[in-house]
Image (cartoon, rainbow, N blue to C red; front, top):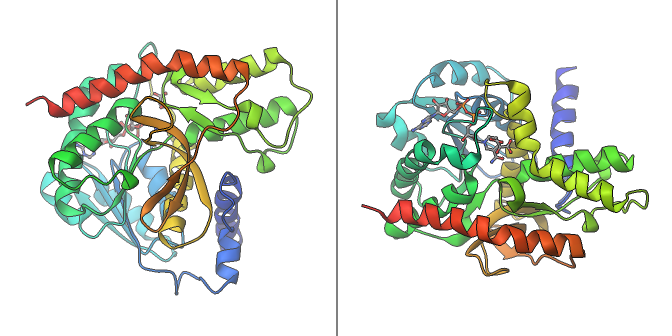
Length: 354
Ligand SMILES: NC(=O)C1=CN([C@@H]2O[C@H](COP(=O)(O)OP(=O)(O)OC[C@H]3O[C@@H](n4cnc5c(N)ncnc54)[C@H](O)[C@@H]3O)[C@@H](O)[C@H]2O)C=CC1
Ligand SMILES: O=C([O-])CC(=O)C(=O)O
């Protein structure tokens, strides 16, 4: 029963990850790439006792590609680590608490996932989190540069449109920046676009794929429904406009429904687990692993942009282009540029002051 449930979670993680044409966890296992023979991989979660951190720790504990799971927070991690650590899956779990343990938490990490920071309350924008979260991200990235400079960094903390540029500048200052290893996690936008599209088009959600490009806030989130598969002929222009708006406002929909108790945590943990799994597969040499992510980019005039990226043994193997856009999407792209540009510049300026 337990094994069946674990298998079904693992396979749904992989099935949902269908923007990648990568083989499923099951096919990896069938090819003799079992947890016993998979390479050792250490994954560290910073902010592991939080609303996202806890379910994300659980999902990473269920991933057979992880051999060491390191859980760090400023408080509460011993309990989370003891709890998750009792689950009978491959990885060894260690909890670390407080700044003096941050170095040990990070040492030897292959992937560092960062959901540390404050979430929104109703009425706030993601940018309203900047003042607190920018400082948290800056100090965590300074530690990453020191203790695990080669790790892939999966940035979840908001505002992603600014925290990713902050991380890049901190890494540049430390002399360790590798643009192939820094990712803003925008997978939740893809997860939402798939769910909303499947609902509207009345197609089975498991087979749906929708690229989402741009950034991760309001109109900077640009789902490309013209490229959605399977093609739906039953959607009007109005339907596509409504789907786009709902995807852009997905975070706010959850913030309002939680009415002061935070923002998306469970769906974000799921999305974060999907993205980390794709990074692990890339590191392990699985071919053709493709996910959308907010990365250093030259596909538009902006230095960072979310688009499909191909993942490999060193992180990003290729930043893929946007593909053909509808007139509506071209307009969306044009309108998002100034917003995204100013969020990127704000992050860069913050990291370089003092
Ligand atoms: N990229 C995305 O799609 C999404 C991003 N988010 C963002 O993720 C962040 C976290 O959200 P929640 O987990 O709901 O918040 P939360 O408040 O429940 O958890 C945050 C955790 O970070 C910890 N923390 C604070 N300062 C830290 C530091 N210096 N080092 C390590 N840990 C530290 C806190 O102790 C807490 O346990 C927020 O900024 C939120 O806006 C949320 C949903 C989606
Ligand atoms: O909306 C928020 O504040 C959290 C977030 O980024 C999301 O749910 O997409």
